[in-house]
Length: 403
Image (cartoon, rainbow, N blue to C red; front, side, top):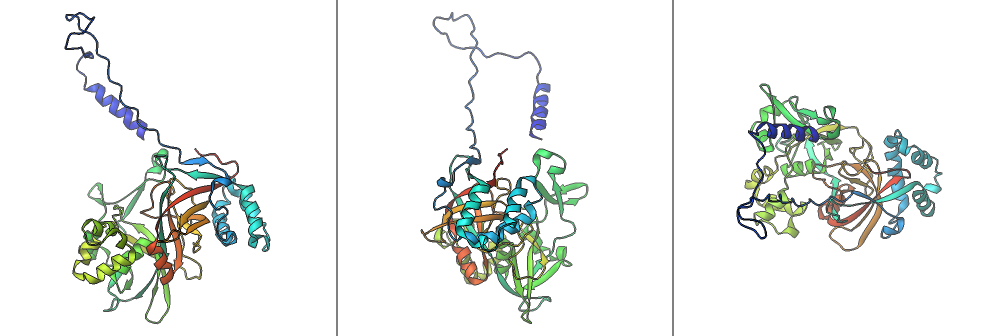
């Protein structure tokens, strides 16, 4: 696609030429040149743009601080979940077969597991384009909301399923080098136009009136459910309904926390999830103004009941404390990642093997991770406080070579 655009641009520029190329000349005398003899002026050489660092760089196990990290057996169930998807790929067949062949005793033995990882995998340090090794590590969780299947004074905020007129264009179907790039929109006449923003959807509820899945009790909690991507809704009879991400309106994600800081409403250290909720509670008359800062809007689907974690982008249940969301353009979904960071709002080291099993609209970049803490209030407290620096090593089967 990019090569095609360059060829087209060259053709257009060529079509604009009206005569032979005019070479620049010096306009002032020079020595020892004759003032009457025009001299060709050398064309300035444009500065060479910096070359982006390779996102995956070969490393050793000794490069990873505190390897093998905390409680290595705890990641084993998450690895087996990843293998349910990865074992279909030739690169992963040997590793997954060896993992499935482990005895229950071996899978709980930290020493045996360390040898397993070091024999089966090669570490690759993830590196940002500017050659830096550190990136942002945030947290997310599965929240609990109060709600109902019918609208009531206690449940008046709708959760919507994807609308019928929301279209997704996958550029990879047209141009293989743009695989993974998608455009969402709607048809207006004969044109594809951007889909409605959050503010526009809020002002036109009739657009989604037949797409209500459930009603919940709090708009700010519903907003953070969108941010988390999945959650549970407790109905009046005490039963729980699970909902998860189904689609998104294609609009860019804008941080409402950053907006509050920029407006001087909160300090940076106050712009956590709990800080934002407290501000919203104190300023109900400005809630719509706050939420409409983010034009992105998430649609949900009902998920099967179960005791495991929510279903991530890999299509497998997430494991609390062992699953992370990553940017799939830079980190293969399903792969183990050794994460070296610190505990939320703390300087204590947090180093462990995680599984890249999810994605997120705000998770962009090479060294970037969103740490899944699990379900409930305590998990939410940890997720809300987490905004740490971290380094990441991708663990890939022996024989893997980055493209």
